[in-house]
Every structure is written in C-alpha cells, then in structure tokens.
Length: 352
Ligand code: ATP
Ligand code: MG
Ligand code: MG
Image (cartoon, rainbow, N blue to C red; front, top):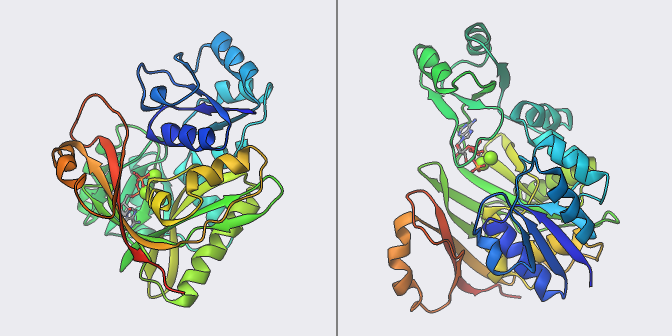
C-alpha cells in the first residue's frame, strides 16, 4: 500500500495514523520534538527540525503524498517538500490560513460574512481601527494563535495600550466583537476529484479559550444548517482543497459569521469517531490518498468532551460509563491546559 507522510506528531497526527492504518496504508510522521503522541502508532517516525534539509528530503523520499496536522509549517520546508512530493491540502490553503488577515480578507472576498476587521501593526493603526470598528473588540495576533492565546479583549478604547502591549510587537488584527447566540463548526472534506462531503455541524462550547465540548446535533434551523454546509463547500472549492477542513462559525440573528478556518482535521470534529461510519480522520486520509470519500452521515447524537490537564483524574470513572468512548493521546506528562484526550458520549441513535 501507499505511505502517507504526516507533518506533525501531536494527537491529530496520531489519529490520522490510526485511520490510515485501518485502511491498510502506512504513515511516516515528521516531528521535531521527541516522543510525540503519534510515535506509538506511526509506522515510521523522523525526529528532526524543519530546518534540516537532509531529513526533510529523506522523509519525502519514503512517502507517496504529504499531509499535515498543523498550519504553521515553515515556508522553506514546504518549498523543499513540494519539489519532491504532492502536498495535500495544497499551498494555497496554507497561505490563506497561516495569517488571520489574509484569511479574513480571503473569506470576505468569497462573499462570506466575517466580523469587521482591520490590520494593526502600530498604535496609530489601532487608533484608526478603533475609530471604525469600535469596542468591544478583540485584538488577535495574525500568526501562531491557538486556544485563545495571543488575544486581548478591549472593553473600551481605554484598553488600547494594554492590548497593543499584549501583542509584543507582533502584527495583529482588530476584530469587532460578535454578539453570537452560540458557536458551531462544520467539518468538511473534498476529494482529489472534487467531491465534497460535510459532516453535520457541531455546537461548540469553550472554557478558558479552549474547546470544552462539541454537541451534535447543533441548535440550527434547516436553513442555517444548509447555509453552514454550503459555505463550507464554497471555501473547499475556492481553495481547490484536498482533505478535511474545520470551519468555525458564529450563529447570529443576522446569519452565520465565519470566525476562522483550519486546513486540517479539527478538534470539534472528534465526535465523528463515534457518530459516523467514516470519521473526519478517515475522510482526510481517503482524500489525500486519492480515494473516494466515505459515508460521513451521522448515525448517533454525540457529546464530545475534551480531557484537559487534571480532567485526567476522572478517566477511571469515565471508563466505567456506559456509551462513553475514550480516546487518550498517550501523553506522558499532564500539564494544565494540555489536551490529554477526549471522550465521546453517544447519546442515542438518530431515528429514521
Ligand atoms: P482555536 O483554538 O479555535 O484555533 P484561536 O486561538 O484561533 O482558537 P479564535 O477561534 O479566533 O481563537 O477565538 C477563540 C474564541 O474566542 C472563539 O471561539 C470565540 O468564542 C471567541 N471569539 C473570537 N473572536 C471573536 C469575536 N470577533 N467576537 C466574539 N467572540 C470571539
Ligand atoms: Mg484558530
Ligand atoms: Mg477558533
């Protein structure tokens, strides 16, 4: 069978490896840090930095296609890898999603609703942005932010100096605060021949900036649900995307507002492992391996809960719960804020 190269050996890389393995495919994971979660399950592991050209070349030569579990792969590494093997999803998806300003500009150009936003690289920029967007608003670093890190909330214009200081000189975007009723996300996959399949939208609750639960079905009416899926297909097609993507949305009375996209499998799609015959990881592997997509129809209601840091103290109890599927990432050290695993609580089968 074919070998899939995966850049990044965290829990997403681990679960991608498991999915590939189930399809009789091999994986070779490339990860700079030692003993990553994917090490236990990947067929081959390279531990080397993204600056190590010889290691990158050797890695590429063992695989048929390259994919990734995170969007911040250095450009120089991508240039080198792309000259040797196809990278899926392609460079356009990475270019767009590595920078919040580029991403929001791209989404707005597709005709999608975003929060009002403006580039902020100086105190003058921020003053200017506040004069149009106003407060409350959120200043976010353009690059490398995740789990709500690199963000500063402005209750009023008086918070400007502090917010700018929080960015520590990094380029940022100011976003108007969206008064949403709730948050949902769509996990969608596009195959190499352009077939698109979206999972049922999930409803997301965050705690301390980190995803806490995803619940399916989400509270959406039929037209909102249709909108969510169609706009995701729109983004996938526009990017000529191959693989699985996560699209985060705010639900408001004025319609759905796109918060951000992730060019990879997504934490809010973990429920699919126990709610669908074919989950987001298998859909991704199918797409990058050039297979047709599988059946991602939701067969059950599910609540996914992330197990973060000390939540691991409850694993013994969770293991005894009926209808609870545990997914642990094999991380040796428990740390506050670290994603250690998740549990999918299957609530019952979808009728009909
Ligand atoms: P992730 O871990 O999902 O990548 P992130 O660090 O990239 O997170 P965002 O998703 O942009 O950050 O924001 C985190 C959360 O903050 C959102 O899920 C939402 O709850 C809230 N938030 C972000 N932007 C806005 C906004 N413009 N208006 C209101 N709330 C917002
Ligand atoms: Mg993000
Ligand atoms: Mg987010």
